[in-house]
Image 1 (cartoon, rainbow, N blue to C red):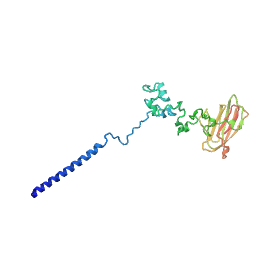
Image 2 (image 1 turned 60 degrees about the horizontal axis):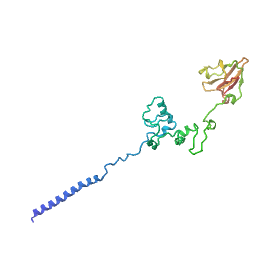
Image 3 (image 1 turned 45 degrees about the vertical axis):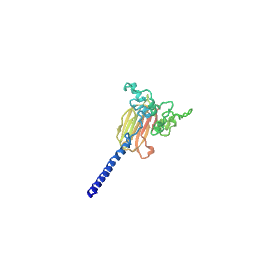
Image 4 (image 1 turned 120 degrees about the vertical axis):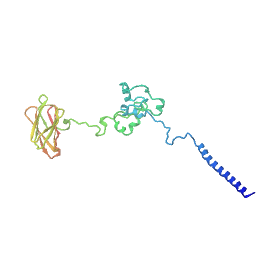
Amino acid sequence: MSADSSNRKSAEILTAICGSLLMGASVIPQAVLAQQPTNQQPINQTNSQVNPCPRIFYEAPHNNQVKVPQGCPPNAFTQRLIDQGQLNQTNVPATPTAEQTRLGVGGEAGSATNPNPAIFNEAPYNRSQSGLQPQNSGQPGTTLPSVTPSTQTPGAQSVTPLPSQQQSPSARIAVANGRVNVRLVNDTAARITYQVIGDTAPRSLEGKSDVTLQGLTAPVTVTFQREDGGLLQATPQTSTASGQLEVRLDETTNQAQDRRALRIENNGSVFLN
């Protein structure tokens, strides 16, 4: 065999080998792609269902403040809108469907199976709902007592006793036909603001001056204070005339002597506070 013939044979064999390698390289990616699933879902996709009617819509305070979405059983607020004709009742189920019940649709507030929803024991409702209504522990035959104002913690409810229940009268006058006259005398150099509660707006009394409030109906309360924030000592002085009272207002540095209000009761008892 000649040298030219041998070289041609070698070139043909090399060409055949290269062609096979190229065909194999193109087939492998296709095979890999064919094995990958075509119905893969995005990684972040979730199959969980969203509850369109969460039970919080049926629990206080939302039960009486928030309208439920379309398709949900009406809560108390939604039912009021329906009764008033402000909301169309079309396609609104009266009770939860089986699917809604499975998702936890509410109706627990007032429910016989759960009269004390768990949300009442969670912030902020455990603070705002406490003491407003009796709660059942959920165990048969066990009922927790309702909280009354007398058992509430100090500061929860403030009841101001009458002046006659707090102190002895500072003076007594004879009330004339249920009416009294009060003369305020400002012995200070500062301006004083005074007001007959429920009768007049706040008024000013200049220093070293006086004013007479006539025909006040007992019981009556008069407040006064220095506009410069100073302390005031109030000294009542009765008169022989029926239904007359004079109160002199002077400066003091003793906090215990500071007075800001005058109260005259129906029986003529005078209290300064």
